[in-house]
Length: 202
Image (cartoon, rainbow, N blue to C red):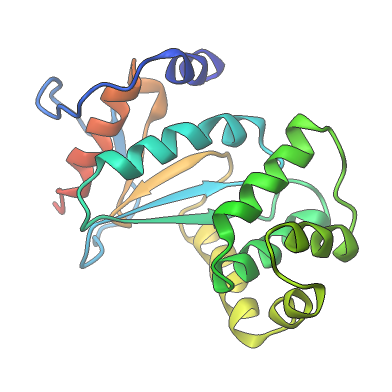
């Protein structure tokens, strides 16, 4: 796994070509649910405490640029890393999404944990990060305590359980296919595989 992610980060992003590989169930992807979503979507399950997820961010950004515009890309924070801070950061990420600062918030959290090597300990640290995104502490506290944010955080927890996610990063396409990241050899091939699955429903 480590070799795969190191390879992703070391490669120059090339144009998307989906016809280079004959993608096969059991090798390149697994079927994890029988029914696909009505519209194409990609969901990344991640944790701010996951070093691979931190290194995965540039790849996900590249994928957003390469995939067709009709493919919705979502992020789902998981609770099972970070002990008691795992659920708190799921709630915080849900609040950041609602406040439309999720990209800035994610970048700051990843940087603090993995680059600065500084712990995040409770709500005050989370509010301080929101301030850096331009959200006041009172706005952030209101969002964190709101019903919509709690509902979104609960949905992220349910999604993790529904797809039996036990390791991250994990990519689910169209609510049906789980990408086997160990089966691809390059950034180009990874994006092409996700593109292939986003067009697939059977």
